[in-house]
Image (tube, rainbow, N blue to C red):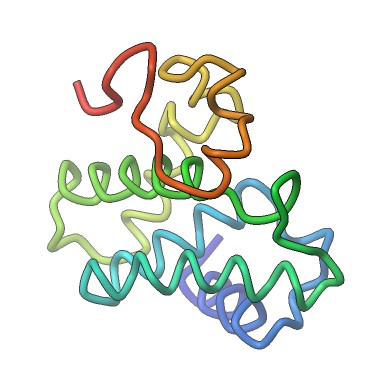
Length: 140
């Protein structure tokens, strides 16, 4: 994926026109990397969180106690993306960060389960609020 393709993905995401089948696990990371590289961190986090909620509604989904937006997972992965940006030299261009993103261990779908029990991560409370990992800290 190129910067131009990432920009278009984020644009389509923002206007609610990204096809549902293109809203993949990887697309979440591209969107989050885009915001974290282009906005002040507090604004980037808000853009990620609110963008996902809004997009879910735009494709006919809901943000409930059992589906849609998940606060703990979103913030957990965002923390890893921020760490990745810092560790790879924040001054590098977006293309370099995007190309390196695909080699990151944290892209695996089961990655959070190294830090959380499934029960805690899938709980209603974790979906609604940030919960710290119950197995190990995610930033060691």
